[in-house]
Image (cartoon, rainbow over all chains, first blue to last red; front, top):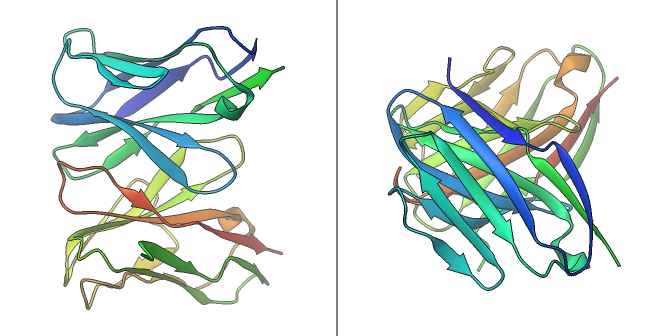
Length: 110
Length: 112
């Protein structure tokens, strides 16, 4: 059974802290791994990772994939209150499924 | 620049009623998906389509039906609503399986 597991389930940090969100997966025929940010409504796309070891970066956010260990991390440095959201990890499989984890709820307090 | 449009935004149904959740995209995407998201949970795939006339079941298809007669539209049908179908429903589309999915704003459905 395909599985995407995110940890921690929730996290509370102070502004300025650095956080690392984890995503592990077990799927048949892995294609790519995606990170989304979900605030009040629809998830918005952050990164797509297909190759191991290549860091993707966008401002204070970065992510990397390890296809050998079936693992990805999402880093957020110098967190701001606007980073408060649910961060979703999803794996795209060969069966054309975009399979989501349960998400990590991040709360950044001033 | 509409992207993915879902209607309605909110709906309350009585047990046993039926309804159709509408989803339309204007990006000429081949792939379309329907997800449900229960409180505190991730998204679970209900059905997906890789092109007009082609649909397939996802993780949780029971109690739902879909059709894809055009590239733009991918409606989700609930025939006999049950309280377990109370959820937020998201429609998404992507150009192909190698690109990211874009999401609609969701439909909050309550079955009482």
